Amino acid sequence: MGALFMLILLAAVLASAIGVVWTRHESRVLFVNLTALQNQRDELNIEYGRLELEQATYAEPRRIDDEARQKLGMLDPRPQDIRLLR
Image 1 (cartoon, rainbow, N blue to C red):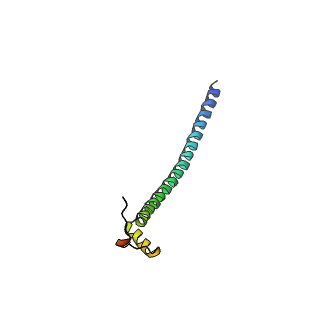
Image 2: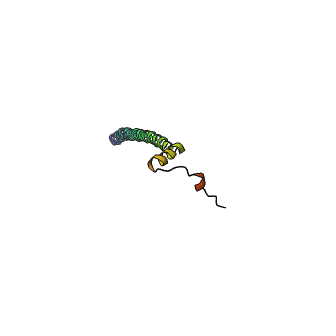
Image 3: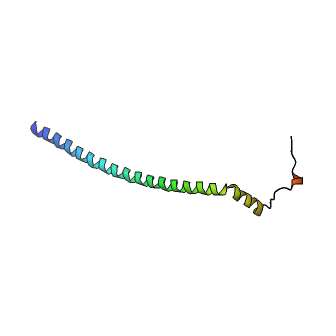
């Protein structure tokens, strides 16, 4: 009976040790994935900031006015071409 108890105890210790090793491995794999995702998040945040800056630059009224005049040939209307509607 003592030998059986010792075998059961040995099996429990081995199972526990294997469980610890497996858990540590999974933890490391998940940490590597987490780090990769955080790096990707940081890169996307940088890209988002760059795109916001680019959008603000393109939406600047002075730039829009310059583009309209240069590319589309638009001009300010002459006073006689302006009509008020009521």
